[in-house]
Image (cartoon, rainbow, N blue to C red):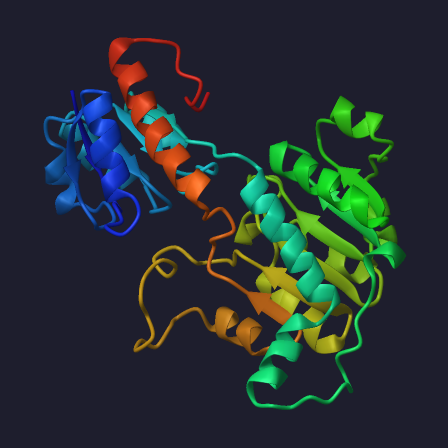
Length: 328
């Protein structure tokens, strides 16, 4: 069998793909670029393609389907960048490659601590040898109530990690988890979370229903000085509403590993480019907002896991075996 891999990174993924390709007896075509209509020809003769967060709209899926591709796997947990409905219409199976929850959970706790302790301002001052204290007085977790939206594997790990800091904890999810309840953490409505949480952390997949979950109306209901952490998907937050909330002082700080309209931007070197994402430039300019480039997942364990499991999923699909990574 043959698999065409797109967005294959030379410095960390290539060696792993070569190794697991040999172990699983898979012929690989490795392409460093994102999939497009031109390089789709590389997938001719491959039933499976392996991608990351590149957009896969219907018109691009049609091109791959015309070359015989029947299986699209993404080396990510989220798959909102793939038009799953269109793939099904074309007879294509979509799969993901979930990694362990600890990397993103660790990163989330780091962003929480950086935000409540105003670490961005501290580091910027230290870099220019400004050792003054005015404006960098922080808060302590024990005095705060943290609301976690989404209690899947990552959200639960964040709650478990935070439980050792002595802070109040609230949870919200469409499907309540028994383990979270056993920990004594109450599930509340979004309305109640807006009113009670000093800091809100997002850990839910992006859907049509929760797009812009945090918008102008939601922010107006939150506590003054509320802090927001997002290591999930940028579309969960209305960026313009977020910017307005920061400018007015309603939002006291934010830690963002994801932003809206990041496709085609992150993972590329744009230091000499004029970026079209104006909102990202505004957010990066705020002294109380930390922005990183969608890399909370990025650990050694994660990279190996997604390479291995994405190829395993391809093998299972071709052999007609039960596939735990298939998107239903």
